[in-house]
Length: 97
Length: 240
Image (cartoon, rainbow over all chains, first blue to last red; front, side, top):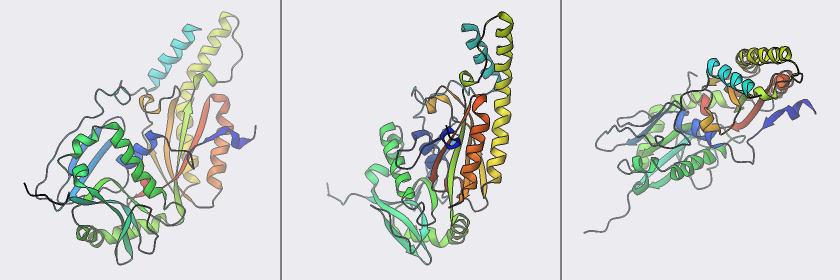
């Protein structure tokens, strides 16, 4: 196995992972802050704060949307990123064996 | 009831130099050295009164988000681009020109900053099951193995910071994002690192560093994934 084979490469002609696209398109890039700004989402999972601007409309509106709630794909069971949870997981695996 | 023309708005994807070729399905709204990559959209779909409902529609959101990415992606490798976040919509093309006038200096600064560079993503994944270890036999060996697994989980976190530091050294700029949760990745492995790097085009040092990291950490159950090149979403602020 060559060194490069160890790196899993994605992108290019293959469609990018949806998570990567959502993260970038909804959470990155320049936010245009104008006279009207609508906070659409605040998704803790992705730390997404999507702001939509409709310029030169008459009124500003703020609304919260929770499209990710009740969606098993996106709904959070908390952040399993902590060391503790990994250790618990390892202990669980070790116990099964 | 009087029939009216369907209301339209201008969706702006990003900013490019005015001599860029427009992306398919879009037009360039030019002002001075800059152009906004824009497309007419129906306000029946993107208007502020209907958009909240649309955003609750996962299929709709995925489609539109992928279009946004595809339009910006078409510039990668060809011309620098400043990505705007999803959902910048203007009622009138003059409003788009006003955007270019008001924020032109900042857009030019970002364009200069990303010229000749692309964003790449690197993720490091940890799979405890892939940690190289001797087969278990006795109880003592089991305990030794378990201890090794526990310490490899701790090491994995340290590896992620070290990997990021080395990758950042091979890049022009670097950003660490929060690791994506399993609900989003759909993978069993734990994401340890979710980094974005602004890399000079044609520079092999970065890819080489990723390959070295992969080689060094394979036995610890850590794999590396390279994505991109992407439009410079993570480096779109001029003070980034």
